[in-house]
Amino acid sequence: MREQRPEQAVGEVVPEPLPEPQPGPWSDPLPPTIPESPPQEPDAWPFPEAEPEPEPTPVPTARVRPQVTSEQQGQRQAALRIADDLGEKEPGPRAQVGRVVRVLGIERAQDFYEQALFIEATGGLMLPDGSRRRTSGGVFFKIVRDGVSKEERWKIFPAPEQGKKPAQPSQPAHAAPVRD
Image 1 (cartoon, rainbow, N blue to C red):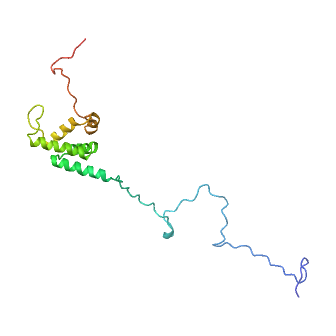
Image 2 (cartoon, rainbow, N blue to C red):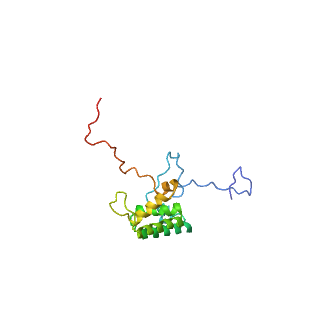
Image 3 (cartoon, rainbow, N blue to C red):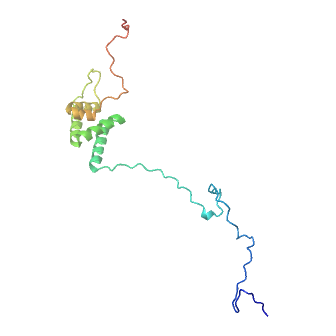
């Protein structure tokens, strides 16, 4: 017969006590304290597919060209044609022809160009010192300079750069400085 315990009633099933947990791989106790600093990130991830993706390499940005209107394109073509016909090869005078066309417009620039061709065909213009004739480009720039307003002239022919030598004062080189 079965022995009855005094606190148990007849027919009542009492669960048996659970055994004490055995140490094992899944029963690690919690750490007694929380570490003060977060754990260091490992040098190599144990699972390559879980590695964070590297920062993308920055792509150099392309220089955005401003949109050119058909009017600006026409001015550019006219300036290149005039500069080529005048025999201008250097970037400075070619840019100056471009400023003439941009400031005065294609029609007025074409008129000055035709005047320069006429002057060249009839003997050209001499330099102020009379040493030689002006080039075709020189004739063109001279008649433009003389035929435009002061405001237009400043836009086409800006003030000389700071790097150029200013005019020397008219003091003789051998004169001694004045002392007090």
